Amino acid sequence: MSDLRLTPQGIWFLGRRFPCAIGKGGIRVQKREGDGATPAGIHRIVGMLYRADRLAQPQPWAEKIGPQDLWSDASESPDYNQLVRKPYTFSHEVMRRADPLYDIVFITDYNYPEARSGLGSAIFLHQWRRPRFPTEGCIALRRDHLKWIAKRVTRGALLDVSPSLASDD
Image (cartoon, rainbow, N blue to C red; front, side, top):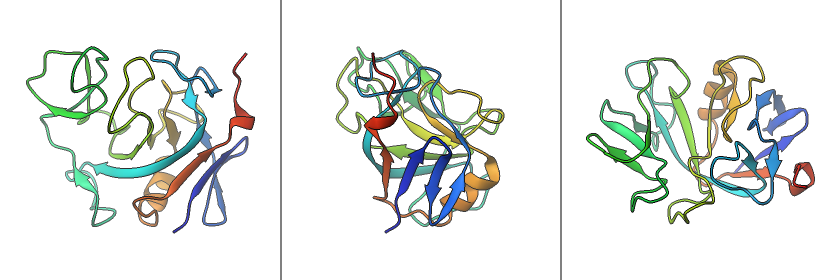
Protein backbone atom coordinates (compact mmCIF):
# COMPACT_ATOMS: atom_id res chain seq x y z
CA MET A 1 0.00 0.00 0.00
CA SER A 2 1.31 3.46 -0.89
CA ASP A 3 0.48 6.35 1.37
CA LEU A 4 0.13 10.08 0.79
CA ARG A 5 2.16 12.66 2.70
CA LEU A 6 1.43 16.37 2.87
CA THR A 7 4.52 18.61 2.85
CA PRO A 8 4.96 22.37 2.32
CA GLN A 9 5.68 21.52 -1.34
CA GLY A 10 2.49 19.49 -1.85
CA ILE A 11 1.27 15.89 -1.62
CA TRP A 12 3.89 13.17 -2.11
CA PHE A 13 2.57 9.92 -3.51
CA LEU A 14 4.41 7.07 -5.24
CA GLY A 15 7.57 9.16 -5.50
CA ARG A 16 5.83 12.11 -7.16
CA ARG A 17 4.95 15.53 -5.82
CA PHE A 18 1.57 17.10 -6.55
CA PRO A 19 0.87 20.77 -5.73
CA CYS A 20 -2.20 21.14 -3.55
CA ALA A 21 -4.35 23.57 -1.61
CA ILE A 22 -5.20 23.22 2.06
CA GLY A 23 -7.74 24.87 4.33
CA LYS A 24 -7.86 28.64 4.58
CA GLY A 25 -7.31 28.21 8.34
CA GLY A 26 -3.98 26.42 7.76
CA ILE A 27 -3.20 23.11 9.41
CA ARG A 28 -4.35 22.66 12.98
CA VAL A 29 -3.91 20.00 15.62
CA GLN A 30 -6.99 21.26 17.49
CA LYS A 31 -9.49 21.22 14.59
CA ARG A 32 -12.92 22.76 15.24
CA GLU A 33 -16.10 23.04 13.17
CA GLY A 34 -16.00 26.13 10.96
CA ASP A 35 -12.31 27.01 11.47
CA GLY A 36 -11.48 26.33 7.81
CA ALA A 37 -8.43 24.32 8.84
CA THR A 38 -7.02 21.06 7.56
CA PRO A 39 -6.60 18.69 10.52
CA ALA A 40 -3.13 17.44 11.39
CA GLY A 41 -2.73 13.72 11.97
CA ILE A 42 -2.70 10.39 10.20
CA HIS A 43 -5.96 9.96 8.32
CA ARG A 44 -7.05 6.91 6.36
CA ILE A 45 -8.65 7.03 2.90
CA VAL A 46 -11.85 5.10 3.61
CA GLY A 47 -13.89 5.80 0.50
CA MET A 48 -14.00 7.33 -2.94
CA LEU A 49 -16.95 8.89 -4.72
CA TYR A 50 -17.08 9.89 -8.38
CA ARG A 51 -19.38 11.38 -11.02
CA ALA A 52 -20.10 8.50 -13.40
CA ASP A 53 -21.65 10.90 -15.90
CA ARG A 54 -18.31 12.71 -16.19
CA LEU A 55 -15.63 10.09 -15.48
CA ALA A 56 -14.92 6.39 -15.73
CA GLN A 57 -14.84 4.54 -12.41
CA PRO A 58 -11.29 5.15 -11.12
CA GLN A 59 -11.23 2.11 -8.81
CA PRO A 60 -13.54 -0.88 -8.31
CA TRP A 61 -14.25 0.35 -4.79
CA ALA A 62 -15.26 3.89 -5.89
CA GLU A 63 -18.98 4.63 -5.56
CA LYS A 64 -21.12 6.74 -7.88
CA ILE A 65 -22.39 10.14 -6.76
CA GLY A 66 -26.10 10.32 -7.47
CA PRO A 67 -28.36 13.34 -7.91
CA GLN A 68 -29.86 12.79 -4.44
CA ASP A 69 -26.52 12.57 -2.59
CA LEU A 70 -25.69 15.14 0.08
CA TRP A 71 -23.15 15.33 2.93
CA SER A 72 -24.50 16.40 6.32
CA ASP A 73 -22.51 19.19 7.98
CA ALA A 74 -25.13 19.80 10.70
CA SER A 75 -23.46 18.99 13.99
CA GLU A 76 -26.88 18.81 15.71
CA SER A 77 -28.09 16.09 13.35
CA PRO A 78 -27.74 12.36 14.06
CA ASP A 79 -26.43 12.11 10.47
CA TYR A 80 -23.61 14.62 11.09
CA ASN A 81 -20.62 14.00 8.79
CA GLN A 82 -22.38 11.27 6.82
CA LEU A 83 -23.51 10.78 3.26
CA VAL A 84 -27.27 11.41 3.23
CA ARG A 85 -29.93 11.70 0.53
CA LYS A 86 -32.53 14.27 -0.50
CA PRO A 87 -34.82 15.35 0.99
CA TYR A 88 -32.74 16.39 3.99
CA THR A 89 -33.75 19.32 6.19
CA PHE A 90 -30.47 19.87 8.07
CA SER A 91 -27.44 21.80 6.77
CA HIS A 92 -25.56 19.89 4.08
CA GLU A 93 -23.31 20.01 1.03
CA VAL A 94 -24.57 18.90 -2.37
CA MET A 95 -22.26 16.16 -3.64
CA ARG A 96 -23.40 16.23 -7.28
CA ARG A 97 -22.25 19.76 -8.03
CA ALA A 98 -22.58 21.75 -11.25
CA ASP A 99 -18.86 22.57 -11.08
CA PRO A 100 -16.21 19.80 -11.22
CA LEU A 101 -14.90 20.13 -7.63
CA TYR A 102 -16.49 16.86 -6.47
CA ASP A 103 -16.15 14.82 -9.66
CA ILE A 104 -13.73 12.66 -7.61
CA VAL A 105 -13.81 12.76 -3.81
CA PHE A 106 -11.62 10.77 -1.43
CA ILE A 107 -13.30 10.40 1.97
CA THR A 108 -10.96 10.40 4.95
CA ASP A 109 -11.66 8.97 8.37
CA TYR A 110 -11.17 12.32 10.09
CA ASN A 111 -14.14 12.47 12.52
CA TYR A 112 -15.79 9.74 10.45
CA PRO A 113 -17.72 7.46 10.51
CA GLU A 114 -18.54 8.12 14.17
CA ALA A 115 -18.56 11.91 14.19
CA ARG A 116 -18.25 14.00 17.32
CA SER A 117 -20.03 17.35 17.23
CA GLY A 118 -17.79 20.39 16.97
CA LEU A 119 -14.69 18.67 15.57
CA GLY A 120 -15.45 19.44 11.93
CA SER A 121 -16.86 17.45 9.07
CA ALA A 122 -16.05 16.27 5.57
CA ILE A 123 -12.29 16.29 5.22
CA PHE A 124 -12.04 15.23 1.60
CA LEU A 125 -9.45 15.25 -1.13
CA HIS A 126 -11.05 16.81 -4.20
CA GLN A 127 -10.35 18.99 -7.22
CA TRP A 128 -9.17 22.54 -6.62
CA ARG A 129 -11.07 25.62 -7.68
CA ARG A 130 -7.89 27.18 -9.05
CA PRO A 131 -4.19 26.72 -8.22
CA ARG A 132 -3.60 26.73 -4.47
CA PHE A 133 -6.95 28.41 -3.76
CA PRO A 134 -7.71 27.60 -0.09
CA THR A 135 -10.49 25.21 0.89
CA GLU A 136 -12.78 25.01 3.91
CA GLY A 137 -10.44 22.35 5.37
CA CYS A 138 -10.14 19.75 2.63
CA ILE A 139 -7.08 19.13 0.49
CA ALA A 140 -7.55 20.04 -3.16
CA LEU A 141 -5.50 19.10 -6.22
CA ARG A 142 -5.38 19.71 -9.95
CA ARG A 143 -7.89 17.56 -11.85
CA ASP A 144 -5.31 15.54 -13.80
CA HIS A 145 -3.29 14.91 -10.63
CA LEU A 146 -6.38 13.84 -8.69
CA LYS A 147 -7.34 11.42 -11.48
CA TRP A 148 -3.78 10.00 -11.58
CA ILE A 149 -3.79 9.43 -7.82
CA ALA A 150 -7.35 8.01 -7.90
CA LYS A 151 -6.29 5.29 -10.33
CA ARG A 152 -3.44 4.20 -8.04
CA VAL A 153 -4.48 4.81 -4.43
CA THR A 154 -5.73 1.90 -2.37
CA ARG A 155 -8.60 1.97 0.07
CA GLY A 156 -7.03 2.25 3.49
CA ALA A 157 -4.03 4.26 2.32
CA LEU A 158 -2.82 6.75 4.90
CA LEU A 159 -2.80 10.52 4.50
CA ASP A 160 -0.06 11.93 6.72
CA VAL A 161 -0.63 15.56 7.67
CA SER A 162 2.26 16.10 10.07
CA PRO A 163 1.56 18.11 13.24
CA SER A 164 4.89 19.86 12.54
CA LEU A 165 3.05 21.73 9.74
CA ALA A 166 0.37 22.98 12.13
CA SER A 167 -0.28 26.64 12.74
CA ASP A 168 -1.99 26.27 16.15
CA ASP A 169 -1.23 29.12 18.53
